Length: 157
Image 1 (tube, rainbow, N blue to C red):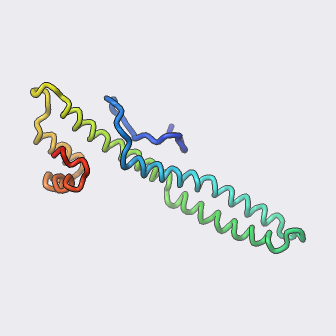
Image 2 (image 1 turned 60 degrees about the horizontal axis):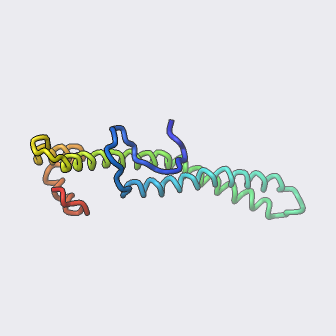
Image 3 (image 1 turned 135 degrees about the horizontal axis):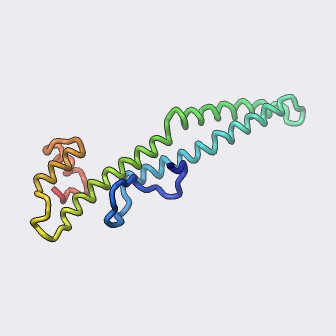
């Protein structure tokens, strides 16, 4: 079962890991989405409770008009927060980024494992590897080469 608010964000890896690689790109986006999800998950019930307290003291002469304002504003903000959290599918966005990070990590490890192979006969043919990467990314070879021009790791092709 997946942890709703994990302490660390790791890419979804379903293959045996060879060595630990540096954290990049998609994981930073996942961490931002996870922080937003945490904030929304905490503030929604908090604002709902604030609205309930404000409406409970509505007839009280101690708090006067402020209790009604707190109830109305807290309820409105709680509905906005809950709509963003559940309607925006923030938790699914976190899992999407994690899954994408795992997919790109697999492609990266495949390329690096091929480049690290000392025995030339055991290496995969460069053109075949390039075609495999293009197919995994859903690109043609020309699109892949055009994409690699904009990548900071463009030394591979």
